[in-house]
Image 1 (spheres, rainbow, N blue to C red):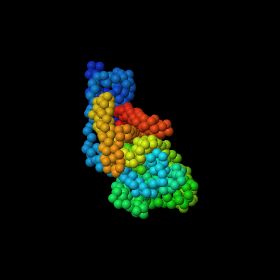
Image 2: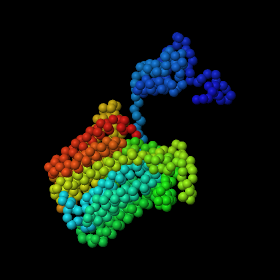
Image 3: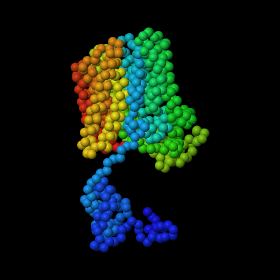
Image 4: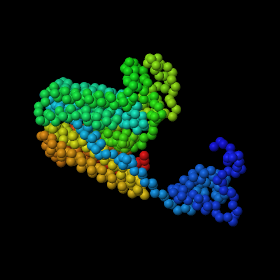
Length: 592
């Protein structure tokens, strides 16, 4: 832009006029605006506003003085309005997407989603093997075995922590920085296990040491399973759970002694922990992560440490991830230890969520746990030497506060699930054996739920290309929502019927319990859908209020608690469904 207007045309020839500027025409010549209109008719016909044409004219080098002398208009905007009025609108059809090997942007295999649902549910068999060690001398007065409160406290803590941890790791993966994702898992999973253990031990009472020990092992498993699922190692997790699964099935046929039960539980637990550690070290660069861990242990965490993930090359430069489906998790972490777009994925729903989703090397950031830009440890590990600041063009790590709503959402949905499966026992009703089929059905349904979240995104993406008006797109999105939600409820009802028939001694669910479970499924699926599209704060707020009200209803008496068990999930489900229609019925929510 600062070059001379006298440009060299090559071969020593110099041009004395600017290129592309038409010469002055005599008054009797044809209208120059008609000539210009014919020359740029394709661009003019596709414009949605005169300002778009004005931008084209200015980008072509036309000044206001040239426009006044040549076309007789005051400026580019006046000329653009004239051109816009002369040329009829003719919007081009969007180009068809090229076929891909995967079948489309949001197409995933059903088998992969079913596998995830299976590994979500299999850890529940650990309670079957550990039942003799968890059984107390008496029940807690609500039809639940002693120690149940300890296990529930540890479970809810793990759900909340690992939901937030999975979001953070998925965000790093969406930004192309696998090492930072591994570092987040390497530090976050042990911290979550420590927190879950502390909560369980604090909730334990006299005679509940066995439950507290099991809760400790459960917290370790939740962190390790989250790491494997985030890194896409579902099959390894399935293989590691094989000894425990086989042992639980064996207990249905023969009485397994206590030593054998402990050996089977320990075999699966050690396998999961070992595989998770190996995969995290591989993802983060085995040598660098080990050196970072050794340095952290040697210094006892008293100083800020060098993060090996920050030493990235051009191969690890960050790339922007789709805002929806940003963790490609679609909420997957909900039962990974959790999930769905979910968000949501792939939400994420995986939304930076679905939005997968869906779901940004990096520079030092206090929020992201990066190093201090001014000083770094020296070669010997103890001498601190001045270092240059952040690398220009690097991208800051994701804020820790952005993961907080995901943790709240995980905790709230966990409470709602417990209310749905334990509502009879918590209200002082029948034995807690009625809870098992509902819990298994809800957990297994997370696999089909994830697939349906992807289907919603895929169909809405196609409707976005094929709709001519906002109203037609909103109608298509609403119909797709109804179809996917109906399909999920049908799958959940079928799973509830199957697990009830297969579970020994489990009574058939009454209409109230089945309806409450289905309403909880609606809250889960719609909440995961919102999470996958980046509206996790809204989903967390609605589910959090519902969980709080339903918990408070337990202290008001059996009659009120029974009515609240249907009213609160029903209202929350309607609110979430309405929010999905309003927020996701807009075409701008589906940009990627």
